[in-house]
Image 1 (cartoon, rainbow, N blue to C red):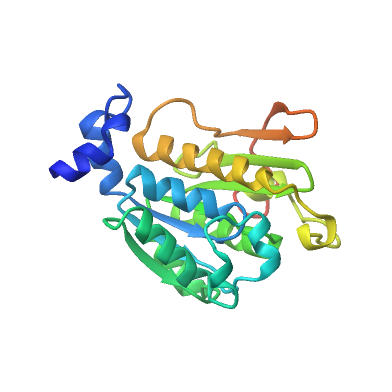
Image 2 (image 1 turned 45 degrees about the vertical axis):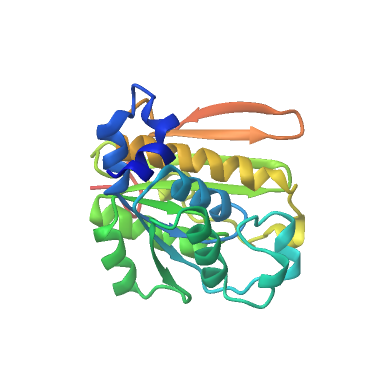
Length: 247
């Protein structure tokens, strides 16, 4: 770790749960982030700011004017630009030492399997069940921890599925089939800061997993009702009939 890094991360290194050893572990870490929208924006930015050494980002969408209300990694001048390009520029400006690998298309099954195999932690900031289910299957197979987030209207949720543990539930234990008709914020709306709150919690959970500190949200679903600003936690259990993780 050089002098510039020591100064940049000094407030984090002061934490007894981090110190020099933990910061070096973050610098050596690789995290896969799927989705660069409302959740992926603060998630990627805080991981870059915290010094996670290699971020792999994937999103096949382009920046739209309606994104800017909540997707803070993008700017007005980025409208029409690939979200991966816009995000790379913001992340590099925030922390030039972070290595960024970007995919501006939906990852193929082989690409997804390869990136998950290389990642220390996978973060799901996507906005559809098809992607979430595919990520879950790949993480279960690779035995990699998955940090999942979602936000809609004025409600959000975060959960950690630590597939390094045999007793961990998976995403399909929580959502067996998904909804009949999927709705997103384009139909139902979302309060601007809400994805920022949820994405920031995801970033905290990713860092805790990388450093092996605290009590991650493994086997727990954290729910936020922003209208009343109430949090509640629901215990999650492995489903013995789950089509993905049951053995």
